[in-house]
Image 1 (spheres, helix red, strand yellow):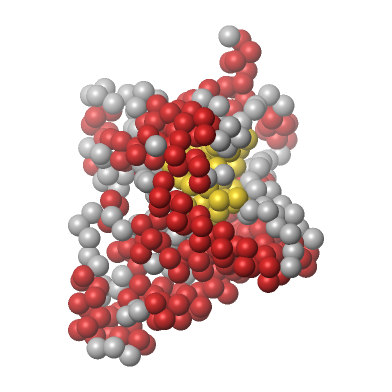
Image 2 (cartoon, protein in one colour):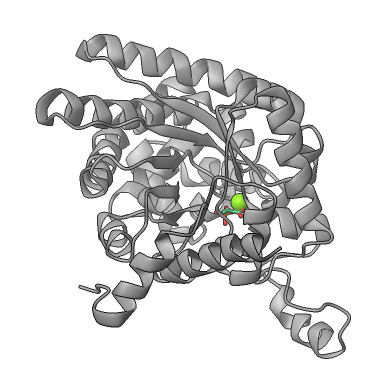
Length: 363
Ligand code: PEP
Ligand code: MG
């Protein structure tokens, strides 16, 4: 198990006396959570739930859900996933020992869940008791040319609300169980991805509250929870004042925000970006160091508009930039509450946050 020791650990204790920014981590397993805590993470800023849906047998149930003929079929498939999903969250909450945990509801590009090979389709057709050619037609009808700009994130939940309902139930059952039986103090933070229009969030927030309160009543315990959103589309940053009416917190998803602001695919950019950097057209790879003049201005605007509507709104960043020093310094300057980065970058972020605070004192 990694841990910080000796001089390095002392240095880290020292830098923590100076920084104002909190440092959280991006983690979606108990193991990553543990590593991040050893490196000084003060919570989870982004727990992605996509991978949980691919694990072992689950992918079959997920495919059944997406391809089910009706709501009943989808609900039946989701019931199989609920107990496993609840177990995932119990593991993570337990490892984080009451530190804040932001769980992001499902945000896959749909195609990652669809069966492709004939053998997969045949197997699933048998399971679902439908003809393989019928199933193939359904799979083909869901095909998208640009999945990353398509039916993903909250859009998927607008179409299939029962997916997020299941996840909110799993989160709240996990929290209630630990609070009731083991005396934990947990305030789950439920995060809705890829919002571009406040109405999406208003609708999904309302159903999240309905499910969360239902679970709380079932357990008969008192539990607080927060519902917030990712700001990861330019339109979300531009309308952050309206979005903030429905959000307890914002987390800036600068991976997608960079992709959509530049109109540059985060998955393919590596093919020509090094050439752009070499020619000094871009000073850096904008997916590594936050583009402060462009993308950063949208983040800044999002903060200002969010705070104008809701002065106490909690603000963080969970794109890869949250662990890159120049970006962390920028986040400090625009007044974010925390950065969240992969576990091994937590010490880097702590150091950069302290440097940013010390630079203030020099000014
Ligand atoms: C982001 O878009 O910056 C983000 C953190 O989410 P993901 O990388 O999962 O799209
Ligand atoms: Mg994203």
